[in-house]
Figure: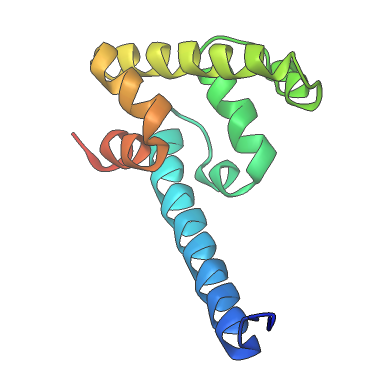
Length: 120
């Protein structure tokens, strides 16, 4: 029996494609969130800083930014997810949207941020 192995060039190509996709999604979310923040009266550059943007989203939803520390605790990080979803709902209400947008925020965050940021 021979041991099938992956060609190293295929592995490198897969890694490059993965990194390109990650950077593209990061830029997409950064652009969309910066527009959401600007519409909410927050400086847009805060959308580009990974943990800071979560803190700002919590604050826009009426919660303390300290909730982000729950993401470091294994079981308590579920509480952070719930609080973030409630924050998304409160942000949606302030933009005149309903529960459907909250579901979109929970499932397809980049699409939600794009609609809020670049929509009317």
